Image (tube, rainbow, N blue to C red; front, side):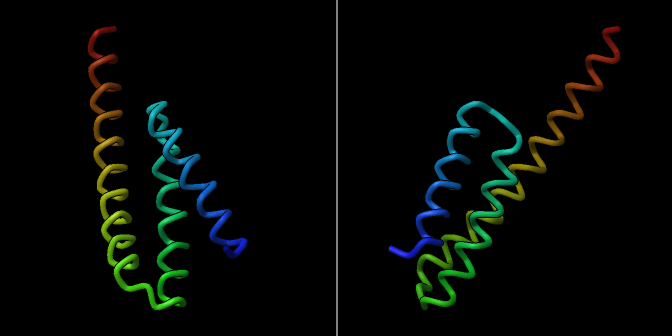
Length: 82
């Protein structure tokens, strides 16, 4: 196993832990790790993994957008209550 693979596994696991804790930084780590995985997969010719990485990256951007929209909605509601 290459050092980059080991580092990416650690970042991916950290991302999953943040997701469980419902921490928005999960998306940043997930996107970062997916981008590096995509580069790695291209270099190694792992096109099935590459396709999955691209799908995961798109879902991460979508999830971040939904999370941000949800945060803005909560902020709007809390201002109306005050």
